[in-house]
Image 1 (spheres, helix red, strand yellow):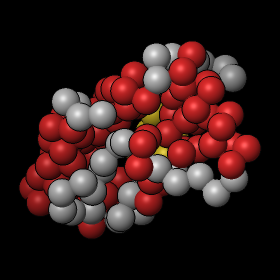
Image 2 (cartoon, helix red, strand yellow):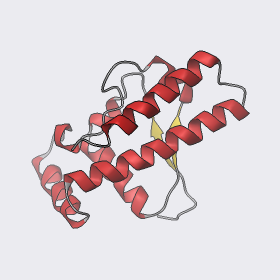
Image 3 (spheres, helix red, strand yellow):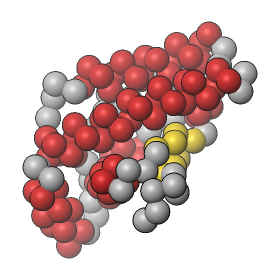
Length: 132
């Protein structure tokens, strides 16, 4: 729960983590605790492509246990509902992508293609901001 402990989102090329209700809920909790989100490994994001690759829409997320789903929805209502959660998590992801692009450049891991893919994913999160 300490602020200085970062939150790490483990990335795979299809970004399956963003389709899980618990993951988005945990990101919300990290935001509330003012934690810094890091995307790892950045190299995995080079393989992410296509519309909706980084879609953040709680209403489309899966949760295998009904008890968990009801708990998460109850907690979401406390922060303003699904739209509010989506907005907060998207803003967090935007900052994480910007941070990741900067880190990759500093560490010499960002070739032109890799940076372009990260920027495209960042753009997809920006574009989704107007949705639920």
